[in-house]
Length: 338
Image (cartoon, rainbow, N blue to C red; front, top):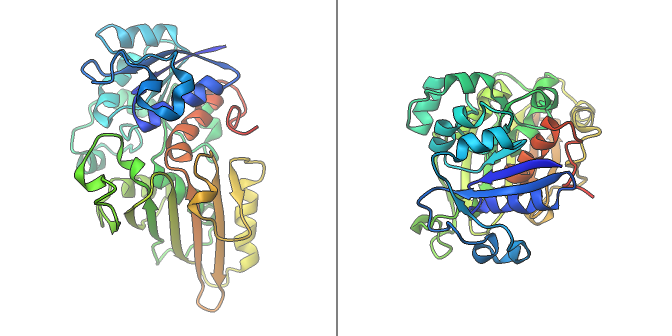
């Protein structure tokens, strides 16, 4: 059995990871940690998240100075469901031992440190770890992930967007003169568990935010290889992301080529479901799946693609589990799909 710990286990994503590891047939969850001063310290997961009442055996242990060194030397896998700054500061210590680290923050997703500082607001000084980090979009970088010591698990919006767009770019179907336009709506769990007025259900309606400046834009562009117009929205629901993406195809591109690009890219990839109709968020909530559908207007050359995910699952915890499976030599969907 693989020895596993989760740091940041009290948040929405961390608690979801605890549940996934608990149910995984090849993993043994030996540690669930929170920051030293967390109000959740010494409580059980069950006491904080009622849906995990069956997991009362997992207590939230406050970190101390020796925790990182101990985990690095004793664990096979460590999940970091922590703020960007914490992941950045702790990665060198965590990755120096035998443990393989799955980081769900944004600290190691963007290789350009100047761009990182612009969008994340602090200077990246862990460049040795950044050089080693592999981007964890499981359907596209499985071989690299399998050989990695550090995996930067993609953001939720980039997961939905890149899954929809990479088959088109890889097959040369996009008109390079027209940027893809991504409009995506997320549930409020994407903002994390910390209480704030702007993500209170009494305040949330449907609103664009981070317009022409969201930190996921450079992540999408870096791993897609072209510029995009990305506009995120906050919706009045708990979980899920629906991304509706408008693209201009190169002249002469056909519906058959479009369909072939998706079916070829995701053949044998059980987490990606190609649908016959446009998906809705309810189709994917509490699942590890990405659902895709598209339509081409042959006359104008424009196509619309919809991608639906659960932001806490495929947008975070279940994608981290896919990466953990890959670095452990297991099938990427093990423990996720019966």
